[in-house]
Image (cartoon, rainbow, N blue to C red):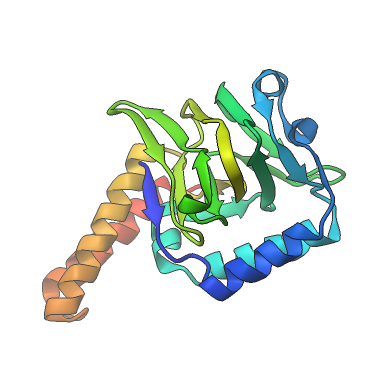
Length: 227
């Protein structure tokens, strides 16, 4: 499932993130690349242990904690601390697949990467190129969203970032481990949750059908969840 989430960060939060990022130290993006990805990755990245990266990561995590669409779609169990990258001057990231397990450097914290996320911090008109292109059974899908919007997609997908030929593309990227490992199962639960919420808006959450569907949702989640 590929899902675009609008307005994860407010315009004020985006502006603050960009302000912090502008004054930070940027390093070669290969600092966090796997062996195969390092051959294709050409960008810059905030040091993951820097004060600025941690401040920005807290902004992202706080926003996600209150985003019901994200919680419904991802059913997050663990979230890798958000990272931040920058593309400019023709930089790109060739076709690759994300590592199955990500470890936070210097800790025992590990995340199975069920889902990948990219949160855009630059407006699309501020740069040319830079489309995140995700391959799926429906073909390649290009994503270039307004600042503050985020795309969520299976980490098992082949994907790449096209060269940025003008301007600067700034974004946060991270991975998460879902309570429901299987993407198809997670998609069914998301559709069911949306149907329940729609029914509740028209008939009320205490409507007998809404009660039955809510019970079905939780029984399926109980069956499929790792937590």
